[in-house]
Image (cartoon, rainbow, N blue to C red; front, side, top):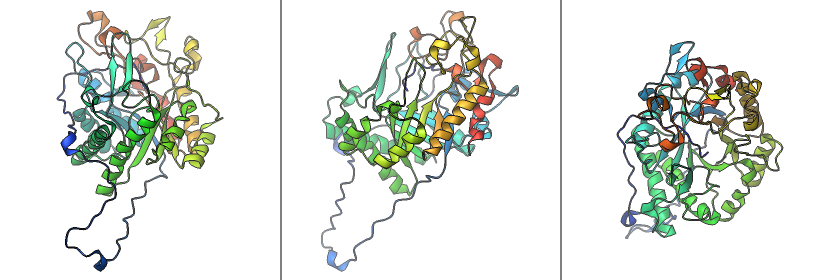
Length: 430
């Protein structure tokens, strides 16, 4: 989802993942296994193809994004459980999670007032992934070679990087392939191998946009990324599920265009699901995720997962005043227009709604549910009260200070950032 979220960060070392230029493109294997000069193929038995490892499709994944936790901790914010400061990775593991979602971008966000926003850069991803693995949690990784542009009034998403704009499609595809493969290699060298990889984020909104969204071009370019994931998994004999991420179940018609243009080399149809009125996702022609999941398996041979979703545990306001920070919330569910009805917004309701969603996804043969931004905390330390001199940023400072998503968190900012029962939907699902 394209959200106006906080970004906190003390300055951190950034490590850009270099992509090969035109002279060293590594294009997907075309199957050419020409013999070396002097070899006599007739003397050799026909080699049998090596079987690819079978993905662990029986596991049902339950988790949350965790990209924001560590740099908020670096800034001085604290996660608590029953009054005690705790490691949030330990907390989510102890309350039923088995996976976390992280994101790696090729390009860094621009500096804002001298602060580098680094949650999506390699050093931070390595740090976060190692903390997850230390708790026995699997990794879902979104790899984003395109980038988002921010201004004081809004954002445009999934744009082609400036240094790649002049490339023809084959050269661009080769660079996508290289970057995906090199990123996975870099993580592997650190002992990090994700279980699920999505190339691109909400690709029905766009991918490598250079003007309008071209579904056929998106399909062809995604194929380079998906091929890199397959090649990496084959090289190291790893079980990695490849995901294609679609925002809004009602927009699944994009899959017809992608399939028509050869984009089929993936395992999972990953969905963003935000039915609140301000985002307005809907099920389209499907009556449930059970029905949707069965339809996707029948039509495309793919299983589904919900990769992004949220349910608010509080409205984030008291008597119309924002609590904890000075940043407007960007999503309230059950209903943005009913945010004054506090009875709809409780940790117990969050838990029950997410449990019901996970059961629905699972009944349709889906493989998991991961919530978005549920590690978020507001900025209680700085911001408007200090004259906007320092503190946590959304993206441009003009949008405000703090978090746009703390009303959907598993940690209760109205109770000293203590963990609340909403997280326990993961313990309710086997």
